[in-house]
Image (cartoon, rainbow, N blue to C red; front, side):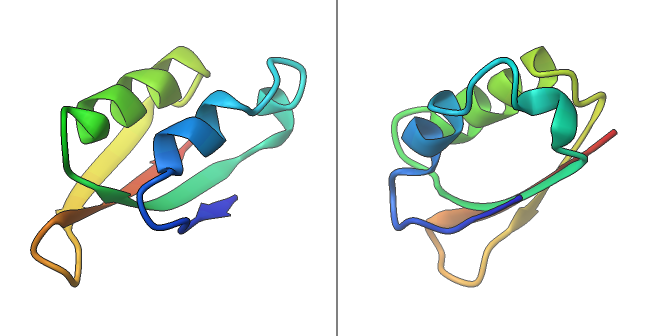
Length: 70
């Protein structure tokens, strides 16, 4: 699953139903780093069963690339 929705990444991921998460093998998201959003996305992904979450500086100064996989 790839998510790039200009500041609404957390809300999109929160909207994924519990029944859908097991079908998702990988997540790539460009997260705008404001108000603890990166930490919230990371916690959500771990809670959804992704043991591996990697963070890297995004292309823009205020973004973080998040990759998660099972």
